[in-house]
Structure formats: C-alpha cells, structure tokens
Length: 218
Image 1: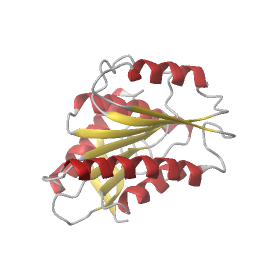
Image 2: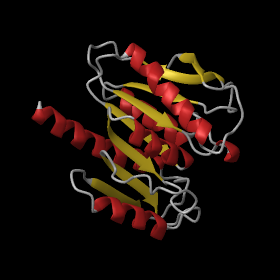
Image 3: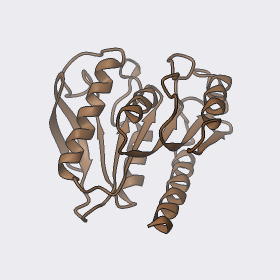
Image 4: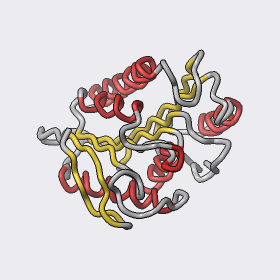
C-alpha cells in the first residue's frame, strides 16, 4: 500500500496506490466522504473497498481531497474536488495506459463527485455509489447515466432519507442501455456502523458478477 504524492489543480495530492503490473489490468478510483465532516481516504469503508479491488486484480487508488491530510488546498464545495478526482484518474492512467476497464466508487459526498466524474469520462465502465447525498445535492446531471452500477444505502440513514435515494434510482432505472442495481441494507445508518463487512460483501458480490459477465463477453 505505497504512499503516493501527485500534482493536482490546487497543489500536491496525497494518496495510497496499489499497482497491478499485469498488462491490461483494470483500474479503480475510490472517493471518500465529506471533508468537512471527517471524511478522509482512511475512512473504513474506503479502506475495505480499496482492498476488495486490489484482491480482484485491480490497480486501485484512494486519495485525500484538497485540504485533507497532506493534500494541499482548501475545501471547494465540490467543484475543486471534482477536479481533484479527474487529476487522480489522469495520474492512474499514466501508469495503466492499457487498462482493460475502469471503475469508480464514491461514499456519501464522494458518491456525488464520482457520478459527476462518470459523466465526464467515458472510459469509466462501472460504478458503486454508497449512501449518496441525494437530498443535499442535485443528481439531475445523470441524464442519461452512461454506465451500469450499484447504489447501496442503509435502512436507517437519517442523513439522506431512503425516499430521496429511491427516487434517484427509480429515475435512472428508466434509462435504456444500462442496468442499475440497488441494495438497502437493513438495521444500519448512513455510516454503516457495525455493518461495514456486510457492505463490502454486497459490493464484492456485485463486482464479481459484473466481471464474470465481462469475461464471458470477451
């Protein structure tokens, strides 16, 4: 889990990166929760999903948005953080020019940023969006959503009530050409306290099914 420092639009960005040297190995980028509410790349969900992708042969990067940890700059209400994410993907791609596929994962605030990046980068083939802040942020830019993916939220999420996420998912499910999966985890909150291993299992099962389909299509 080597530490990396790379240049971002607001200065240096701090990250942790695992590189799979196998030619054509896929890549994944993981975005952490809200910087102003304690979100960092060491968030336990981010941490576990990082290893989930690593164990499946991905080159995978998690990093601190501007102003978090040793990343330079100041919180920018989303616009700057989107630029950070784009710079992180650019940096990964310099070391993985022949990547077979690209995935993006976002947790809470990071889910909002990740879906915006998905709209701008056609190479992103799949996504996992965990506890998206559908009540706080506008997701109408997903018109249409360019890739299939998974949404997961907790049954007792009081930060973003289930009806907000249900409405977002229902809208995306009407779009042709993609498939949206949605899991509501029982007996847990916005932070999946005490349930992170089960959350990771849900994400792993989804990823494994997607990778199996891609393998059959080759």
